[in-house]
Image (cartoon, rainbow, N blue to C red; front, side, top):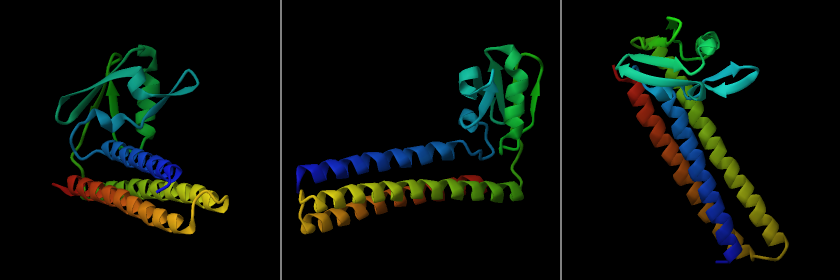
Length: 188
């Protein structure tokens, strides 16, 4: 196969791998009834007019299975951090003592579990869309090569098949992660 074609496939594979990893990281931010510092990874705080990730503004720890403790580096940001947590879709109520914020992780109700499954399915669909978009971009580049006479129609057809196999493999990985995460959420 043409060296340029191999480069396009390799680039597509790398980008699809990154899309799957990003999807996995998004899944980690969805709580499953246990305290996890990853739960707060998607929270950004309006800090002096700039959206800043919470983990850059505070130390986050899980001293107990159902408790997260957030210790801001700048005590004046406590109210902003609290506000951002309350506005997130996490459904948690922070309490602060002026120095730290405590987040008690309640047991998930059946209704909340179903809501979280819907959120996770949406994240999985976003991951699958990202993988398909990468396939589309690589296909476009390959078709341009074929139009310019750089590769033959046969090479293009073989490469399309190879690219489809890559796409299927990556979407299957996302589906497997979704199944595992659904199981975690629905586990009582």
